[in-house]
Image 1 (cartoon, rainbow, N blue to C red):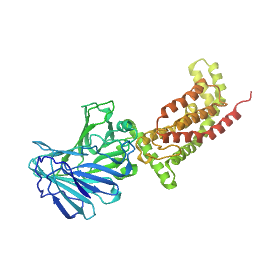
Image 2: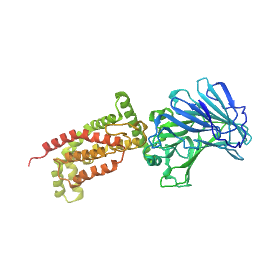
Image 3: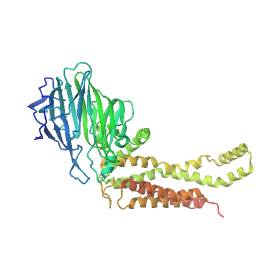
Image 4: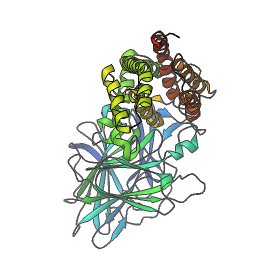
Length: 517
């Protein structure tokens, strides 16, 4: 750990000792107090991250992740912060005034508690109110990327609130810088509702939107990383968050602002900071539904898509860890397993289709014989009844094609921000989370889908509409998935190829059942 001197900053408020320091999570041992006269940066290093805190504003100034490298042209390790912009900003709102802490120099005392956690406590007098903010950086690697924040404000009269400003943007980390900016969003979790998310591009410059609380957490995220503040499990939830669109210098929205309100109870406030990768298992361990920081399926479809997406991720991670296979092979296996699971349904549907094919002459005869709609309907229902076939059997024939779609739809969202896939090579693919640079997989996916349709139409009664769809649907899906993640194309291609043997067997069975002549 070290302290780096930075440029001098005028002292707006003199730091003073605070007698009532925040209560840390365990008793502290030896500590040292350093009076702050200039802007200084203090560094805390852990196995997973390097944290830098500024005494001016008593806020984290930089968080560097040791395990992740930027794939953007600038290179280096991933740092969420933008130069000269703190990751957090604080304001105190009292019944009579609002105090901005972002330019206030604080004094620092450093200590270790009995668990070995590093504790940085910043103190200052703001508007004659003793203020202290303590950051506890856990030594336990299981709590990586987490910081505990405890604060106190003494001498207030009436209800006081803490306004916490989230970062206005995050530094791009991917090769596709524009795509990373397009992923910028603020997320939040009301206690009584599903998680929500607002893309920066969804906020016009200066436009404000209020998300009412109580809230469990609020966060800013890009494609693969997230910076969030979470209300303490047994503490005071956040009251609300106000989102404001930032200025734009191009069509891409690169900045916005979010102000989170929390009531100060008994002169104290507390929350947790998570600043790290969007690893699903790590986010789940945070609790408070923080794994919903990416609300798959948007808000109106979240109840359906998110559970499927979460199970898909868990299944992929389980296979990857248990089978010790790369994610490319895991996706291939998943595609094959989905088709095998649908095999009995395909067989049953085919049997119904064959019966419907046999009934067509009788149904046409009934339609010709009875012109009265009521008699015609009764005659048709009798044909179905005598054959033991449901009138809806034709509709169920679409089920085998439709059932894999929810998984495909969920995987579409999964590949947008599942960091486990980031930078994973497979075959000629350097990264299965981005598009195939040679477009081999999208074309192979489209070709396999066409072959699947062509075999399915063999020995079937002539149907111009089905024939047209057999040509159009593969072309449409190829265009849709052309620039999607190559892993998504890999999964769908494997599923199509795995379905070919059964489609061929069903086509043969259809040929045998077709009346001679």
